[in-house]
Length: 81
Image (cartoon, rainbow, N blue to C red; front, side, top):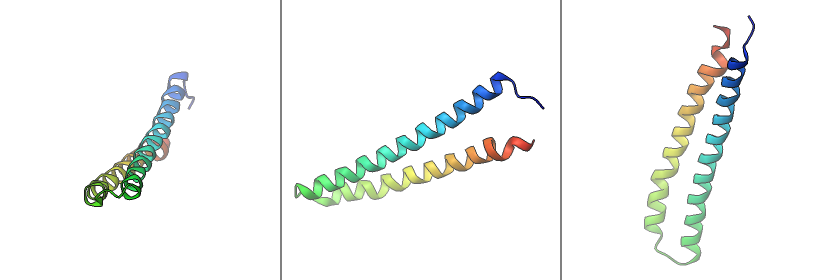
């Protein structure tokens, strides 16, 4: 079965979206890690920064995992159908 240019464009945009999403989540996690380091270096009370990061970082990791799982199921494994 031949793929049209539209199908190829959709696949390219899906992969681009996943790449950008991975960069976004990686940037957020590194930014939160930097904030923790800055709070520690400045001698700030670590309870707020550590408390926020203990909630925020796993949420973004779980969100990334769910999106990757759905993307893998739709884009990669769905090709045979």
